Length: 241
Length: 174
Ligand SMILES: Nc1ncnc2c1ncn2[C@@H]1O[C@H](COP(=O)(O)OP(=O)(O)OP(=O)(O)O)[C@@H](O)[C@H]1O
Ligand SMILES: [Mg+2]
Image (cartoon, rainbow over all chains, first blue to last red; front, side, top):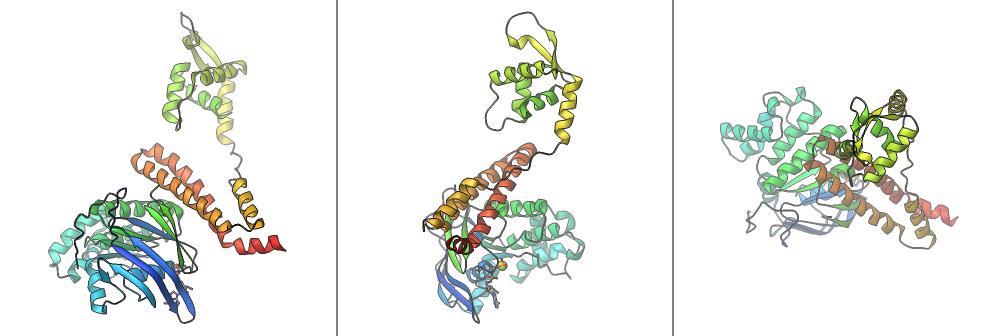
């Protein structure tokens, strides 16, 4: 599914003209609730976009649609030349495993595995042998400054440590897009800051784009620009200032 | 009188010439532009008049820079009091912005746009500070964080106001 977009190290100041992900006219209801009414978003390779807006405005639904976790009722989602709304479940799950990384508010690490095993998991699911997967995982834990908890279980780590382990897991496959939904939502300012700084730094170093859902302006300020969602509609306020 | 008190603090334990004082101040506190000499000597002569500093030594020659200043006991008390007294919590609510929102609603203009434009500008500033922070040392980070938290407070007010625009319009119409 890799396409002609070869240079993944993108300077966010000079975005290539071709977006990696383009969604337009997204509509999605749950029963009688309209979660998304008319949402659009485009994401360039290596770009970090913050998605903000009041609680219940549709931010998570938008992220889930973009990541192929939820199918919109209407609208188009083009990812590197593929229409995600038409893709099969198998195609979507392959895409999520190989091209995307995920990070949620509560790390959602597997409690029965050690931290390094958690980080290695996406590689193992992709068929990488255990030792090599764990070696790579350990390198990512080092980059996120949590190598010291590699052999511990998530239950014995702090929230900030777990969240950095989860960030390592989101990045371990070198995804082209990281989807992060309130990654600092459960952390205090200092730890939230560390997580978001390390996430955005490492994403930039790897040329990974990030869709960052957050209600914290200080967290959004790590992005290149922001999109605001209100009542299921997106408003693009620009950025890169 | 924060510049004067800052001078007093810098002089504590370090008698200095006006020039050194300016350099020390610029190094630690001047985030926008360096202090002007005129301001340095005006401040020192005020402190002198109020008995908060005294001239410890005068070197031969001409010009104000030959005096070495030292802080007096009264000056040290001044520093202590300043450090222990809380600052007046500033009302960061921006009256100009509030006026704009009300005026927009009263004249049937899109108040939401007023808020969005401001919001974008605030976030642009916040991105600037965030970038500066990531390149700076710890002192620089603290200064940037202070600005960031204040901008964030403003932004939260903008968000809250945006969410209440319909109610506000209703109240103004009644
Ligand atoms: N699986 C679901 N089933 C039913 N309703 C849903 C579902 N997912 C979302 N909704 C509804 O859709 C609307 C938008 O939800 P969404 O989770 O996208 O909001 P959000 O902006 O992420 O909010 P928050 O900031 O609180 O996380 C809400 O009214 C929510 O209750
Ligand atoms: Mg949500």
